[in-house]
Image (cartoon, rainbow, N blue to C red; front, side, top):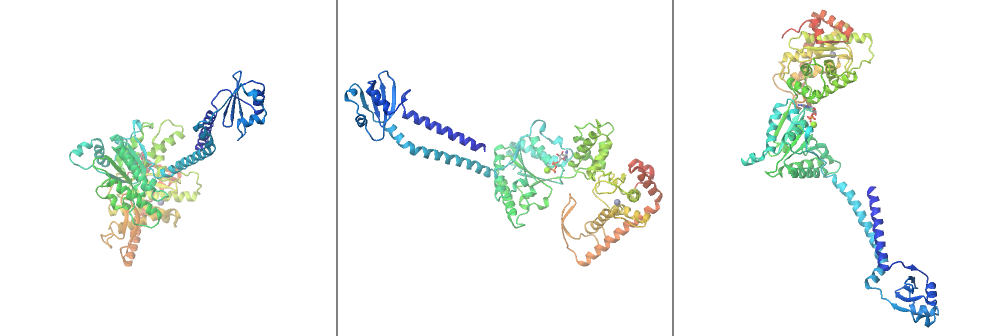
Length: 608
Ligand code: ADP
Ligand code: MG
Ligand code: ZN
């Protein structure tokens, strides 16, 4: 629209310029009065005329008083015939100097051609402008292919460095080397060392992969080209590849620098795995990435960092030497790291004295860095909405639960009967967890609905553990079944409230047998070939590699494990009936009880 207006203005301007030129050529005098032929004849008859200049069809009459008049005669008649036509007495002409001026060649031709040339010029202008406009649109179409990479030289306060990344010690150590490469490349070139091309960051979502990549750029103080894998994939085939090309071109000009390809699994999936357009597009994009990475010269100081949480789906070609041969694994933070991350994110938030981030770290096992940042943010929102000036422990606890299970739903109407069942159910979980040696200590019990849960018991492992024994798993199954068993024991029948407990217990029992080889009858082997993300604990796909007969056995074994766990839970419920009643009553009264209140009721957890 703006362009159109501009073109129009330009065109009018051009028109005026031409018109001005035209008039400048056609008239080469000053103040000329244009008159009719009649007047000319009259003037001649009145003997006022001193000179007549005929030039083509133009007649210029210079009067005795130096005034200049102009007239136009008809097409083909000569001036002489004009004079005779008007019957001017010859003596009147005696004193008049009549001269016929031939038009200069250029002038003549210009005037003759102008009516032909002018439209052509105008049309030409139009065509040029149209082309330009089209080109504009075209260049927009082309810029699809241009990389939309956000390049930002991170500077000043914005620049994250390793200081802003808490924990992740091993990852930082590995990446320190990359920073060194970027800062002092000569050192490495001198020894003939090839600078690594690609670094692949692996880790669950929210573990700080993007943050780490940016902080490498911050540490080395180099430009950072950020592009997400999905941005390469567009509707049009070939766009991704050309984006890759232009991204790498830009980066090479800015070297030393970092190219960061986030979520590379969007383009880096194993090739040849499917049919259809989007796969073709992805393959082309991936191929282009491979070509570009191979095309770096030894001295070109560009390092490609990619991040993914799905290394299992990546094309093997991406991982071979010379490409993403460095792999940095970022684990979920352990308790110390969690505390450190909480500290980093609490810097700008006023915590009341007495808040203990260690406890928060204890309670947030399995949380990622992003979750922890979220906890502090939620806590700040809670404190602010209660018009507090500082964040207190309770805000933080509340925030954990909100992040973990969902917001409280105090408004959910429950009948007294339901409330009683929920109280017994949760008390059952808590008491069984408390009395089974090795099970996690209880931190909080609540019968306020939260998220989709009717109530919940918060158990937190005393320390982060990476290995588990069979008896611990059995204990866990017992704790999961406790709610169900209590309902059966106290009310004689079960409710739907235990559904998710049972589901979890069943899948845990299955894992015990098929993954951990912990079944005595089936022996130490795994069942089912799985594509699994170890650090995500998520099964993606299972292929059966055992017979029908074994499948039957597995089912039997699962049932017997569940039965065993249930029996364990029932025994504790029966033998600790008193504790169960106490906890239930406390819950019915207060709805929520914390760790210390719970310990007052049932005693300190017996050491395993
Ligand atoms: P990913 O890319 O792995 O999904 P991000 O790098 O986007 O995760 O992390 C999301 C946010 O979580 C970061 O912006 C940061 O606020 C926080 N975070 C994650 N890990 C850490 C950490 N180790 N130290 C400090 N903050 C972290
Ligand atoms: Mg990310
Ligand atoms: Zn339950």
